[in-house]
Image (cartoon, rainbow, N blue to C red):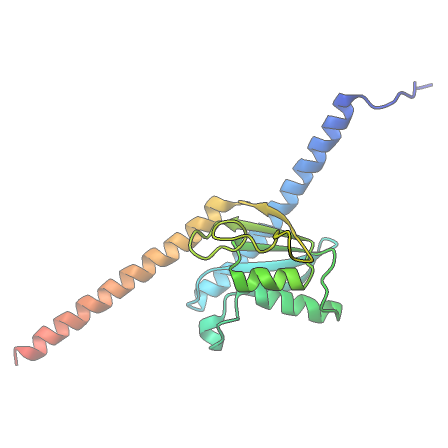
Length: 192
């Protein structure tokens, strides 16, 4: 007969490490899904940000930036994923959900996350200019507000940041080419 013994510190630490590894694996899996959604934004000429809302390991909402296409400054990836999730659950409170987004949310989206009572936020790249989850300000964990989110930052940060950097590099290159073509056209028509 096997001896029954209480768990040791090493047993408990091993279980905690296993839980942490499992959470990290899950976070990376869902962030890869959000990166795939960011590709849809880029294909539409939008800034490549994607978001996926998950409850009980199931997608309940997805979104990617569509502000330009929809002529709607609020059509950020997070906003669209949360709206879809609320419709899916038939509730404006999104309790026990996790939002995965490739870029640190702005103030508008951070406020939305607080109001919708999302439990946990996982984001990839930091946004030093408009990030409202620690970079510029921290709305989602502000102690005066009636709800604070758990936050895991920097998941697949290099991949998320590289996607954004490459998008803006290409955009700058396109603008430069357009300026050069306009200058050439102007010089050609001036010479006539």
